Every structure is written in C-alpha cells, then in structure tokens.
Image: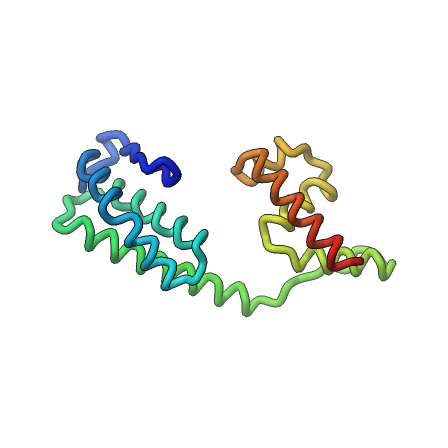
Length: 166
C-alpha cells in the first residue's frame, strides 16, 4: 500500500486468506481517511496515525482467515494498534533518559545532553553521522529510510542543537 498515491499492492495469494486484492483496494479507498481520523483522535499525532493505519491495512491483507466484516476488523486493528502505541509511549516516558558521561569537559557534556534531548530519529542520525562517522547512505540503510530523510533529519537536528547551544 502506498499512502501517498492511494494505490494498494496486495500480498501474494499465498499470504492472503481473508480478503482479495480487489476487496482490499476497495476497503482502502473507502476507509483509509476515516481510519486515519480515528487514529489521530486516539494518538494525537498525524504521523503516528498514518503509520498505525498503514500497519492495520497490512494486517488486514495478511489475515489468514476469511473476514466476515473487513471494515470492522480494520477498525478494531486501528484501535488496538493505537492502544499499544500509547502504552509503548507511556513506558518510554517512565524510563529516565540515560545520558552517559563521556567526557569531563562541561561544554562537551552540555552538547551530549542536548543531543540526548533530540527526537529519536534526529538523535540517531546525529550519532551515526558524527559519532560513528557513517555516510548518509549508510545511515539510510541502517535506519531503513531514504537518504533525503537522513539529510532532512540531520538538518533539523543541527538547527535545534545550534539554537539550544547558542
């Protein structure tokens, strides 16, 4: 499924048990926007909502048993994935951020603390680029994203660090 273009690519017949490719495409066209709205209301983040709905459609496509009511199955999957996502976020928030003391130089410790406050993806890009000295292509392969995403995340991370540290 490609959210941007609105096209659906069904899994091979050996993986489908519950819904045909045509039914999946019809379900996607009729329910996608509504399900994104549900997920958005549940999790409060458009990006997370899109991702949760995408995963829900994948699960519908991979259902091994025939689905009596595909829209209901999809809705239940969206709600359950949203609940799991929020539970995961709560657990993450309870865990204190571990900021290792790398160097005794206060300026470097301050920099590292600022890096640790970045969102995960930006922090990962900064760490892989400047602490592991990986190329943008290697970072993209490591994180499973496009090189452009790495460049964008690095740009935003460096802008935040510059603003916070100046």
